[in-house]
Every structure is written in structure tokens, then in C-alpha cells.
Amino acid sequence: MAVKLRIYLDTSVISACVDPRDPVRQELTREFWRRRPVYEAYICPLVLEEIAATRDVARREEMRRLAEPLIVLPWQAETEGLAERYLSSGAFTPALRQDARHVAACTVAGIPVLLSWNFRHLVNRTRRIRVNLVNSEAGYGQLDIIAPPEVE
Image (tube, rainbow, N blue to C red; front, side, top):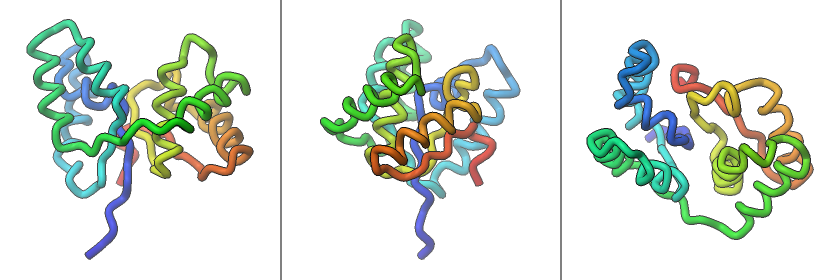
């Protein structure tokens, strides 16, 4: 049996499945979702908190349903420390603390791929370089931060 690629999904990937505002992104996400069982997919408690904060009740319930089969990582003490390192190094600004916490949860768990639709704050080359510099300095592995269509 082949080993499944371990991936981390931030909330934007789950949300995009049920958000009709961008039909192309929604269809690309649904296509990924059909392939999702070939991966070992993880989230952290932050994703569940962000889903719970969704104001639209129908959308929130659909997002919860989509998240149910995903593996929830336990929150580890070192996750906050790594998120703080991202902030103090300038990899993330204080306004992006939640994004830094998602990246830290993924990194501490040793998951090599983080999927997101957040191109402004996560899925971009500069952010990836800065995150991986901190990861190298802190003794963690490299992280690939990509959009769902990029994972194969």
C-alpha cells in the first residue's frame, strides 16, 4: 500500500467548497475535495474555531460536515512558540497572527504541505521563503504552502 501524502488544510479550503462568490475557485476546490481521500488530510483546532465563527448557519454546518473526516491535530505547546518566532522574524506581521499559528501547527506536526486559497497572506513565494528560513533556524522541516489545484 502506498503511503499517503500528509497535507494540512486551512479554513479557506473548506470555506471555498461552500462559497459561491467565486464559482471557478469553488469548482477547483470541489475537484480537490473529490481527490481528498488519496491524502492524509489534517486541520488544527483553529480551523474548527474559525468554522464555528461563521455567521451563515447553513454555510457553517456544511463546513462542519466537510471537516468531520479530517484529522484534528492536538494543539502543542511548541506551536505558539514557533508562531511567535514567525512574528518576531517578520515572516508574519502581528495582524496575521492566526495565519502564523496555522503554519506553526502544520510545521510542528511535520506535515510537509499546507493548502490555502489565501494568496495575499500565505500562498506566495516571499512568505514561503520567510517561513522556511525560520523553520530551518528552529530545526523544523521545509513547508510547501500551495493552493489546492497544485497538489498532486
